[in-house]
Length: 236
Length: 236
Ligand SMILES: [Mg+2]
Ligand SMILES: [Mg+2]
Image 1 (cartoon, each protein chain N blue to C red):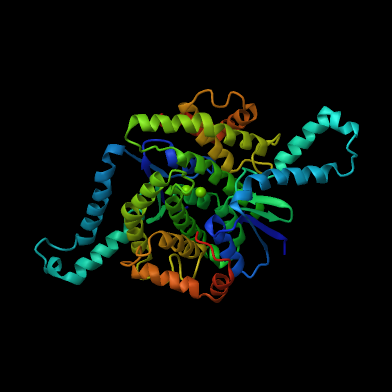
Image 2: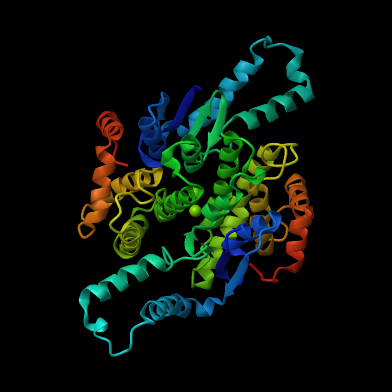
């Protein structure tokens, strides 16, 4: 089993789908959480620590520091070994950094039923995950002006969400899970996204009992129930 | 080989990655293009045509139209067999509708080197595609107020794009392709997204020769070159 280290903020956010999959598949990993305030510093610290590692054999007055090709090499090396696109979550797999939460999640589900049992089911799971993600990505999470943010959030939760929920309800129909006849990571993602949407609008699912039932079914899976019980409590 | 029918607007947009993959893998499909102005009507026409199919055996004064369970059944059937989330592109595969462009694209690359040759490479390709897609999704394509739209487009192209291009250049390094040692759909997606970005800002890649070279390499693949030559010319 490879060595896994997940790096993300101390929140569910974009990392929670990865954590659900680790929990369900009973895979050990380091759940490294950083404070949002420390993020800029950690980003540069990472570079710094790497530099220290690379240069450990050199003394500080070594002529290496005046040798341009060496400096260029170090720069390139650092760029290629730090956060690929300056975003988290990232998953370190035996020293190699993988980025993009959904790509990582899909990678971890490979060759398991969580991905969907056939190529067609896998496509359907991918499509549902992207549909949920498209909606979650509409929210201006980083907007600084509180008034603008509130207005956009309000519009998405009251005007846009009902259409998505209607479509999701129709897609689920009277099936037990979104795709095929067993749980996939699309069901996990529904539980994760809707948990956050319910924080923002507690009555969101009042007229969608089947979508609520699906949440309960995901949350009742023993490994997921245990993870929800033990995870750090954060708002988002 | 299944029967494939792709439905999208008469533009490259979100369907072009699917068309590149069909071209490269030499798979026959119907490239069904609709006019944007016709879209709302087509959406409801689809329902109508389906209804006609279902009801063909009935005469118009049949009591079936007064039988509530039948009406409900027809409603449910129609909801489940029309555009899953009311968005295109969709790909019809032997009558089953798949949605979400990237999920469809990934489905078509399955078991081909276009996906990446290992699970790790597949994750890296997925991550690069999502990184490009995240950026393209920031543009307010549907914004009605031309001034607001111009301002956002301008900000993205002049302030945000340089960071992404810098990261992409670093990620590519002196490699021939983004991932592994042969072309993947991530290289295709780079060519497709950058073609559109260059329409919006022709000097965008002037200081990124390696990213330009990668575009040329993709466009020089015989099947892709042939497709670019023959495809309908549209601005986006
Ligand atoms: Mg998407
Ligand atoms: Mg994304």
